[in-house]
Length: 498
Image 1 (cartoon, helix red, strand yellow):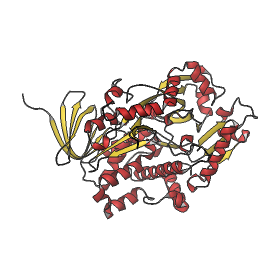
Image 2 (tube, helix red, strand yellow; image 1 turned 180 degrees about the horizontal axis):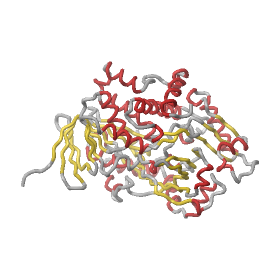
Image 3 (cartoon, helix red, strand yellow; image 1 turned 60 degrees about the horizontal axis):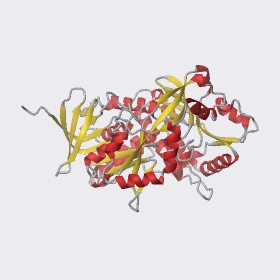
Image 4 (tube, helix red, strand yellow; image 1 turned 120 degrees about the vertical axis):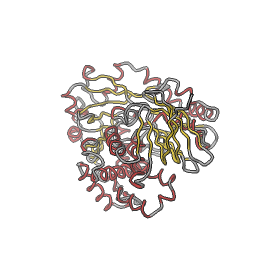
């Protein structure tokens, strides 16, 4: 019987058809138009997992309203560094998207991005004091200069009428507002990028194709074994560079690659659910993204928010997400994902991280045990007049938080995005969750700098990067004039508030 395996050769293989692979593929193709790229996705469409509008917050995680990026230290101080870094990264993404729109590489920006105020809302004296300190720590930085703080009941009622209805004007409440916030449909953006990318010569996307094995050869290139899930056809792809951007599916693939840099990594899956409003009158009353403070032990993806969204051309109103626990690594994954990910090199870090994060375990158990009444009561903290008949429960996305070895040989749970790159730069893997999609452009530019070092330093590539990202190589927070120019330009192109 003859071998019917299909064999292909390319310079780049991208595993997973989400926003990360789309962004990396398009930037590389812009930098080197003759590059041959193959993309493999196990589902039948792009952006159906973490990048889908129903599966992520869509806030454009710009750190304008997410309080978990500005935690309060033991001494009561607020460090703005992480929020500034994330806000800078989001500005980079905006510049790249504006470039794509100007060059007609993606359709009208209204399809994937819209202006909407970003608000942080708290109640109680201690939380109001925290928000005031956060405002003071951020507002002095140019990138947050447009932030407004208020404890005035009537002003807050104008910002978010649905949230303030039913409260007493004697309540101790406060909010900050960033009018230049955005709502981003990363699913739509991802599919638009792939729509353009796959029309280019040398780019092929394979849906319903699952990667089974990865092996590095002696010449440092990679052999990847893939199965067509629809036909059963086997395929071998040979390539110089592999990027694994498969959301929760990245960890199992990293383990299959069997590289030293991947040893000791584990994953802790967290599922999510939304309450979705079904009453058009209620939906029409709220046009903002309002974030509050997370419960003790909650992962970042579980920061509660009452969120006005545009999904598939319709205004939606969501509250949540409510966290849960599942052993799946993907929304469309298998219950055996977590057990199969436990290996001899990561079992100690995983146990150690579990012991250190007992509050998280307790929080997830409480979330799983919630009744419909419990969820409505949680909603009523943000929407006092909420009626259960106006809300239905929807399943949200699955996230895998990174567990890695700490300096003492134990384990630590990371609530962020982690990029693992081999010493030879031939393999790069993205693990983790938020801020993820919103910072995709800066993450991918950094990755290219590490994995394509020689070409990256050439005048041609540097010039092209500056064309795609006008502020490339400069810190916007350190350059208020450039920041203003960039925001004005991207707002005009993307049809946003400035």
